[in-house]
Image (cartoon, rainbow, N blue to C red):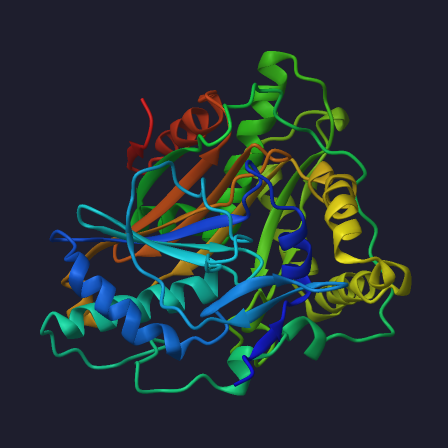
Length: 420
């Protein structure tokens, strides 16, 4: 019987070609429960659920011109967490899935390669896994929202490539920043990924953002900009444009239910060479930038650029082994070289009330990157927003100054880290 196979989406084709021991493309979504994880129940839940997500129940294969994913005859098994997050897992290995499920004490984590999905798709899978886990544990929970049950089937919309579907050929390409400011910090040894998470009071955070007439994402971006600008000035770092890579979930703009990647990054820029900026000026800039850029006309332009690059006749003609050589270089020159850091806010995670009683918190860790050695990701749950800085450096000044400013703005923060 012939196995099913799927093309990778526009973003996935890039990510799978740039993978190395430091740029793993793995990101993590996790849930901390109020009780210890039962590994046998978790294994049974994963076994029951995986067939519901055929695009994830695959192995990455190397074709002549592009990578693709092929249906697996095996079933993934949850593993006890023993290493640093988002490290030491080769998704190109023949027997490996494009994700892994990990457990440790009372935490369940799923690490996906960005070649296969984004934060939205990852959280749908995690919530569905938790639902099945609690169901097998004896809980009677009403199915709500985007949680998928094991008895349902993947729709065609879940498997679609949103980039190709909403690509408009006539749109012109968009210009990029050639070289952005990068943190001049020493890299950690391979295999080590440091994560620092701050839990902020959601109510106070919302109220503070409202004072500045801005959204939570815009407010946190402004704090991030201000901290980086102050560090450049304080430490005498070479001044270059500060560029934030901020993913936008396109499912909120287009009627798509895809479980694949479907996001576009907008890139607000502040150039410290132009002079000082007050926090209020940064807020004003971010707010205006987002209002202009997060617009279908500009988003269509960015989708057009990405799809046109993929469909370039010369690039398509290169065999995959040549793409594996040149794509990391292209990504460095035209991608992360033009970003200082990244910040992703997936928003508020909602689950049925009976699941809320069992789940203490959700978190998200950004993928490690040697080009952008510090990135941040945030997720809201109940009365907290959990913001995690993922780092390939021992330096602590960025997250330290970030959370210090948050506290100075009157927002309580509790800090956790996976390293001393």
